[in-house]
Length: 166
Image (tube, rainbow, N blue to C red):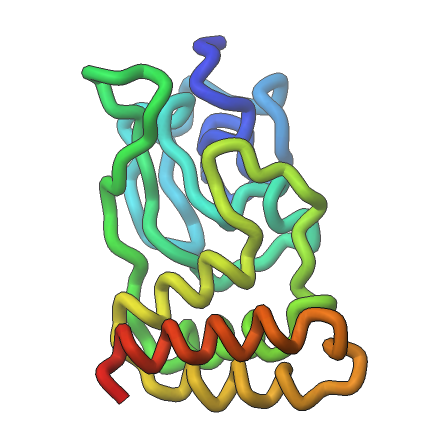
């Protein structure tokens, strides 16, 4: 298998070629690769990636988080955006939940070339210019359990306000 990162579509349980399993040993080369949660044909599954991969979201999160990436052919050590995230109200609500409830949506820590789910959610909501992101961040800033991170959260809120021109 090519070494583009083990968090590729070729090892993901959402790839039809793996029939709901994960790991390259389950990959069926006779079945065309297709992302079941994004409705996306994958031409090069061992060089294609997203934040919903089992290494990032071991809880089998079926709602797309962020874009799909491929390896940049010119710089094999870099990933570039290939497909934008689908944009529906259900996806936006899920991303707001990921931001509001980071402990419930915590990744296991495999962030080679990626970000934790709550950072990917913040970035995606910023790209969509969804102003509800501010209230979601304000909600977690008021949580007593976030006392040690409050200053960082408030700084993030300020940065989001600047990006959204609020």
